Image 1 (cartoon, helix red, strand yellow):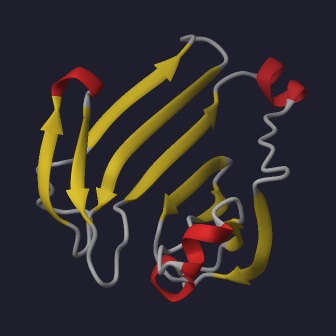
Image 2 (tube, rainbow, N blue to C red):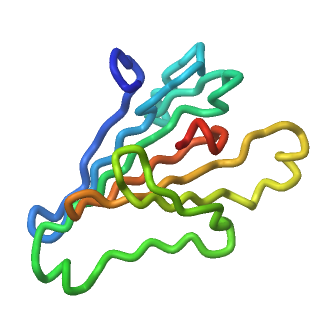
Length: 138
């Protein structure tokens, strides 16, 4: 679903010792359309589709050292997010699905809430984030 994507914006943040974080914005664009690059903000604006209210982005977090592994790597979604469900993906991964609850007024206007799917494979944490339905995120 991420093939042939001219709007993918990827970058890596690392200290070259303990951790690396790979960010892939616009990883899956679905039926979003009319992308326009905003140079001053280094991002794309777009029109939402019927299935994808936004593109889905991917973050990949890697622990590179025993020291970082000992310290752990927590991410808090307190306040603005609520847990939706935990399920097993078709590939066998335990996935935690959470949802943005800070846009209650917008949700009543037909705006799709942001969904976040988090899973770990081979010690690497993957986070998918986008404004799509639960079924589309799964």
